[in-house]
Image (tube, rainbow over the protein chains, first blue to last red):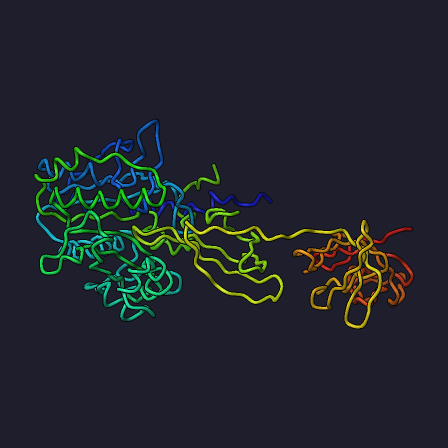
Length: 307
Length: 187
């Protein structure tokens, strides 16, 4: 008897994947968002310290469609979404693929708090559309998608889960390590959690809080312990954005990483951008969540190793 | 020198002068944060295990490990004496270091011994070893329950399941990876 291939066994998940993508398009077009496509190959990715773009004939494959979509936002496209492949160098693990699918959307006129509500609506819509109802079991944990989800500030999360205070962790450059080892395990809860208000250096494209400029208006969504999305109240101040990018570029140079050209056209357009909130959601992770898959390998037709 | 991106399961590295084997490995990267490598490590000398998270800037020394071809000579108390077939140097391994290989220790057996510097750590057996059956129930011809294995004792004292036709004094081949009977061997 011929053994069923890995690819054949993934069919159930890939069918759900297609339905989820269908649901995403329905959700956004129904809410009058415009589906857009922006180039995958770009001359200047956003200079973020820990995100590495794959070079492509002198340019780069985009790590997210953020800069192009924000230029559209500035040009008057107030509500737009995109489903696209993104590429990040060296990222491979049970929750990472160097080529993955991103859902990114921007909503003019709202801030990150209203965007949280939109995320709640989206996931419930998808869940019902694929016949899961309002609760999903992920890796033996039943997660209720009923509103409102949990909301926890980064400061509060560190008080609750970290053995060290946030200030110490930031000073010692151990934020990511404590995040992964202490905070993220605490995000495996019976409802999704918005982890919000990140220290300023950790949200280089996010607006700072009006009453506390040490905090960036950024949030992440965790569902069943899986990190699904990253969002901001968008920074619209060109000068501030330029200086934040400079800081990130200096960091990259210090770490011996590839230097990216300054995305000047994006920066020039930024002054015309309205107040807005935007978010990047990993579609593969979302499919993992809805198909109860422990590894990202199980929700794509082919991993790079299988080509 | 290894860098963090070389880390993977079963890689052997050296930390603070001791050799470690990576028993579990996970690539993680939170949000817009840096890549981290969560590893479970086992000390190859003491067997103690611990978890550690490495960053992409971390580097590692290769563990100074080497297999040497050696011949088994004799037991001495709780230790087992082996001889290097080139230098004639002799080393002793403890019962713990020998582990299950104890079932196959016959005179002059050639094995690979893993060394960390001068220190023997463990043993790798050939995949197949031929051993003499020293005790087994006789074969009753016409026994209808063929296919039913029976217990037998080998020259090393190892208790094994063999087919009914295997009799005392015969030599059999054992797969050391599974500990199971493979076939009869004619000398």
